[in-house]
Image 1 (cartoon, rainbow, N blue to C red):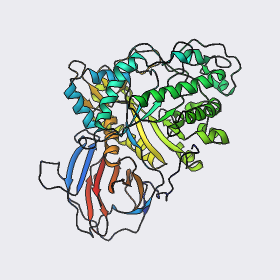
Image 2: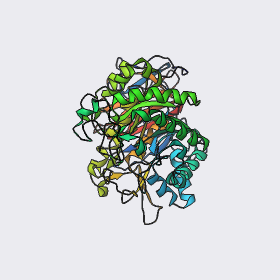
Image 3: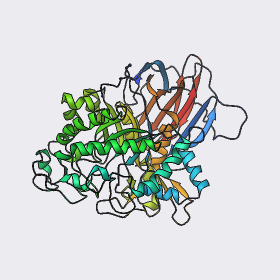
Image 4: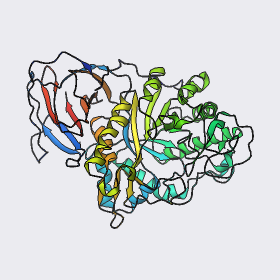
Length: 528
């Protein structure tokens, strides 16, 4: 963490399989009433709930109901302590706004686009998503050729690329008009080519040479692979500074940046190999450059890759290796993670070793490999996607000190694009939502939109996890409870079991009773 930043202290919430501690069982179970879907009404109810089932029959279905009387009991009774809060506040959840996503959004009629963006980002009218990711330059979901904002050598040639100006900026401006508190994490897919050199031993999938220092700075003329020239560290740091300053001048709040998307993947359509040894040295240049420019509040996040370090020799514990250097530690605010390999349990050691450093989940995708486009709402597709993904990328990350989760493309069309289909790019990925390219009006929401919506509607920026107690939950059940800054209580429930489950959240004043369907995720919110 930078010297100028303060770390919020607090008491860590206790954890078990449901992230709650166990308590003595209550005497007799009761069967709580199942709330009915919301209908127009004049009387405000105490509690609002949302549920999505793996069979697709309930899709972010909203219901409202009143508190029950104190003393109601259930095998799944949960008590909570609003005074015992985790140290880490939540920053938010959302999806990436690539230029492909922006292109699809701009093909919509303005009124339709506004309605969708409000449903996604508005606190008052929708889910209230508040954290998004954008590429610094092009990504594998850009529209045309690969690019950065300085493709002609020399920082005097730095300028906003036309693709971002024409597609990304207009969509971001609409999002910020709906929710001015949205935060952005920016990630580059590559530095400018003129800053690249060959990898020691060649650009190869056999990457033991990742651990070898760069000694030959011969320019590497390819978007795929290569290493950052040490002689260009100052220029590349200034590139980040200029990008952040430009984005913030446009009105976009840059919450944080990563130094490289998937730094251990030399085969992406646009990529740069950046082993931890390189990031350790580069952050010592980038941090002071950002601090000098008055950007000390923008977080610098390490890594931005898979839980299993992509199996690259010598790269295990990537962020921990950098934190071990006192100078690098000072400038690194945290780490970012993807789930294309390994398990979220990797974050247990990362958090335990450096709990003061922030953790974000920054990319995951869904696609044809899960079950096929035509089956995206059948039981097998959703049971393998919406429920376990929510358990891993949201509850699993949050229970290990995570500050938020961002998934991949916000919107793709029914042809899984548009994009220029570069070698190494994903040709079988789905977006958080799919829009029909025949009319640019018909939208199908996919599992990742629902995952982000469920987390966002219950947990507002600044929410902190509460200590809670319950009798042993059935296998496949997870519950987390949070206190929001407005003193509302937000609950996230994941039921990966084959049976519906009754829950009672109890205080001395009242109870909140809710029936959670089998194979579902649910969000509950009330003012305590």
